[in-house]
Amino acid sequence: MAINDLVDVTVTRDGATGTITINEVASLFVEYIPTSKKLFYTTGTRTTNSTNLSQPTAYPLQWLTALIKDSDYTHTPNSPTITFTQNGSYALYVNVPLYNNSPTVTNVKAIIKRNGSIINGGVAKQGYIRKASGVINSTLYWSGIIENITVGEYITVETQREAEGGTVAVTVASGEVATILIESLGSNSGIIASRGNTLTTNSNWNNATEQSVKWTTNDLKDDGAYTHSTAIDPHKIQVNAAGDYTLMFNSAVTSTVAGVNNRISVYVNNSPTPVSGANTATNYISAVGGHNESSSSLVYYLRNLSANSIIDIRSIQEAAPGTVITTATPSEDARLVLIKKPIASTP
Image (cartoon, rainbow, N blue to C red):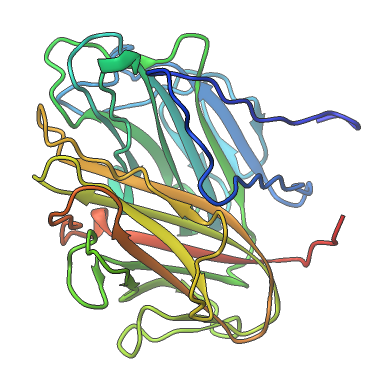
């Protein structure tokens, strides 16, 4: 980016004519990344198998020549593999715009792999497309961290059919590209990365009243920065110092009930209302044509938290009633990451 460059976000209609309004507020988070943070960034439009991302077998995305490749990474153009040359933890962001102009219901999922194995909570499944009313586009997105990488380890991102595709191709949208961004985090200072698959009352993420996610596993935790027990009140994560924090959340859900969609919201200090704009509601499941899985992903900047603030993630029924669960396998776990940031000045 150059001095005085402008960033804007535009919205266009993809389906039926009608009014859609913003629930609460929209938010935009732009962060300056200093040169001390080593980056890898590239794009792609196909897997190693074809341009059709909706295959019954999972194939890795084929990444083109890197647009940014700092010394922490090696990558060969048109290879699916990104290899690390330094130890440490890394933030990862994946975005895959999808297109299908067929009347067939389709859904594609993305699978994040480390050394050939799915990472814990490493799936995105919100690529549902239903041609009715002109809807022909969707997106897969995932964000999180890969903790404690050692030299020589590598990552890949695979795509695979989730719902009925038949011979219908789901491709990267015309004029668009899939993207992957990796950022070195240096030490693990100021980071907590937690996982869970149940709520405070039961395992149904689609309750009529809000329930909190229980974080029963900590993959990474800076004990000086956070207070959290995986056994006692596991839904509560306390930040020990005042300041600003980046929050990254992912969850993958499954159901056989038509028309369900659970909404995820962020709460601070047991407030009666969630943090404005800190929610995601992309867990819609049609239960048609094998579409029984979905997911949600959220990146949010929590500003001006006071010391000892409690972070709490809750889920509630947004559409049809019915049971929505996460499968009891680590690869399907919900993930929560908090990263302590330097305090930002008020504009």
